[in-house]
Length: 310
Image 1 (tube, rainbow, N blue to C red):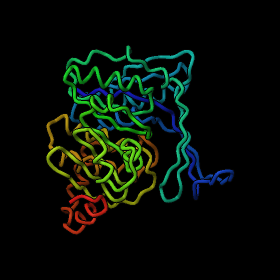
Image 2: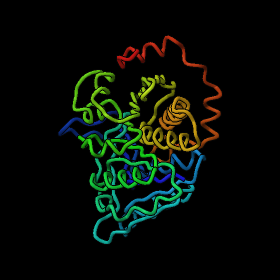
Image 3: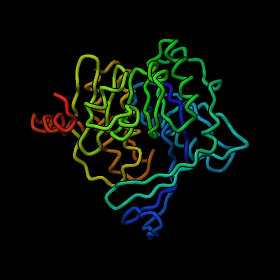
C-alpha cells in the first residue's frame, strides 16, 4: 500500500492568451473548476497507475468545495483519510493557463494548514509515503521521521520550493524536484550536476519540463528525454509524474523503468485540461509507451550535456 499525505484544493482555472504581467488585466477565454492540490493529484495518479492500494491523508473544510474533491478521490479508487475543519475552508488554487499550456498558480491553503503530526495514521502495511510541501513543514518533517523509523520508503516532492533542513532530508529516500526547486534545496546556483553535489539525499530526480528528467542514485545517473506531446495545460504534470513514479516503485520496478513510465504519464497529462481530470490510467500509459521508439543516443547526450553529467 501507498500513503500520500498532503494538500487538497479546488482549482479555479481561467484560460487566457497569455499570463498577465503585474498590474495588467487580460481577458480570459474560459473558466472551469477542477479538483486539485498536489497531494490529491498525486494520490489520484498513484491510484490510476493501478499498482497498489492508495491511501490519502488530507485536511478539508466543512464547505461546498470539499465534496467535489472527495468525489474525484473516490472515483479514482483512493482511500481518503480526511481531517475536517470547521474553522478553515477547503484549500483553493487560482490558476491562469496560457495558450501554450504554461500556467501561473496562486494557492490559498485554507484547511491544508491544519494538518498536524498527530493526524498520521498507523503505517503498518505501507511500503511508501509520498509527501509534498503544501502542508506545514513541521508536519511533513514529523511524517518523514515516523516513516523512516518504521521502515517505510519516504518520497518527498519538494514543491512549492523552500529551503529544507538537513534533518528532514536525512529522512528522505527519494527527492523529486524541478530545476528551480533543486536550486533552492541545494542553496546553490548552477547546472543540475553542480546543484546535485549540494543535496545529501540518496536518490534525487530532477524534472526538466520539455527536456525530460535526470535521476541520480548512489551508483548511476539516469537521463530520460521527454516524450513529445502537444501541450494544452501543464497543470498536474509534475504531480502525475510523482504519483506514477511511486506506484511503479512500489511494485518493484527499477528506478530507470519507473522514471520512464512516470515521464510518459506526465507528458500525457499535458494533453488534457485540468489537474486530476488530466491524469491518465495505466492502460493508456501502456498504449502510449508501446508507440514510442527507444531514446536516441543523440537525445540522451543532449540531455546529459544540459545537466552537466556524463
